[in-house]
Length: 317
Ligand SMILES: Nc1nc2c(c(=O)[nH]1)N[C@H]1C(S)=C(S)[C@@H](COP(=O)(O)O)O[C@H]1N2
Ligand SMILES: [Mo]
Image (tube, rainbow, N blue to C red; front, side):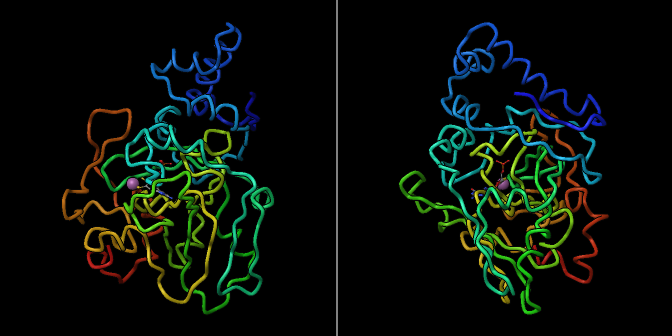
């Protein structure tokens, strides 16, 4: 599988992905079965790996000026160290279990306070705006971080299509829930719900991601479409979205409902506001041993701090 890419991308930017492709090419050439080959390389025998390779297809994005130039987290970690509680709470559960989810056919209903509410077929939604590659720092509230090359387009482009009414102050996201293939344990109140204030939703950094590393999203990363909000803790970035609703009131969110004293609505990355059970001052970048200091707004303060001017961020955590 070849990745189409503009010739102006630096070689260093695609190195780890190309290494991964070369391994696959080697495995194919040498006649080792893909699943067995992957297991040889990675030292594990996960059926999710074979499923991933046969379902993901190339999906290129134009390089974005909003990308970080920090080293990307390796593809293997991005796709096997996940939080997607519908498929289990272990970090490797989503990679093993999310292959059960059918991501076609798939529709996303954009409803609520909109002049032109509409249900989008995912294949139309993907073509709504030029796809970009956005390399973002991602910070999980648990204290680890990654750098992920997403493929997607600004959520604002989708919202523009439905003509939000003046009364629409918030955007609610609801994700796919199917008790036949997902956990029935009431870890959270399913379906997983998230929300953004309208100005956050319209911010150019806020992405609807449909791919990563130049391919369609692996199921465990939230196929076929997920939110990516890089200045907020990872749980705001809802996976496998089916409903986007424009509302007047602040919508309920899954983690806030589960533990309101621990997870607020805003959930901006903030090294100065500790989680009640641990500090948020430092983080471990996956693939590194040292801990590094966590940056205010995950390092995106220059772009987003103005959204919160005058707000007490200790109160609005
Ligand atoms: N539907 C759904 N979306 C979700 C989650 C989840 O459990 N279910 N976990 C969140 C959390 S806590 C994180 S850190 C990110 C992880 O995204 P990644 O696995 O693609 O890195 O997804 C977020 N989106
Ligand atoms: Mo997270």
